[in-house]
Length: 151
Image (cartoon, rainbow, N blue to C red):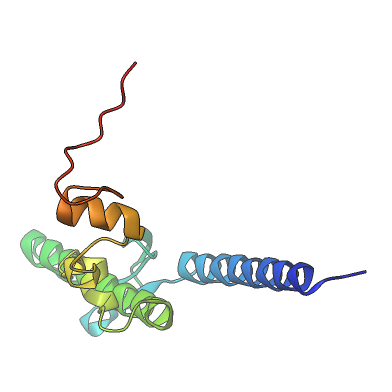
């Protein structure tokens, strides 16, 4: 015979399993994010992965052949940066629904988010610990000295 307590435990377990599945799906979606950019005149095309790592470089036309080395180098760098920006935006879009309200996913990914604002001003703790921290005593009568465990 199942009790209300057993049913609550099963609900908690099912909720936990659902959260695990959600996290797994989020990780899968995040790992599949890419960003692709094509340079002017289709001189080059790059694709980066979710962490901005270079996945592919293509030169669809022969336009790069007529470029000066500095011009080609600048083109490579700017195209990769554009692709990384697109990957970051796509990753932020995937992550945003799963983040606490007020936390900007793009800032988080770039390392510029103020995550301290999400922390409570005081840490969560049991009442007895809170009393001890605030008043220096735990279950003592006023005027008693600290309780010291003796061996």
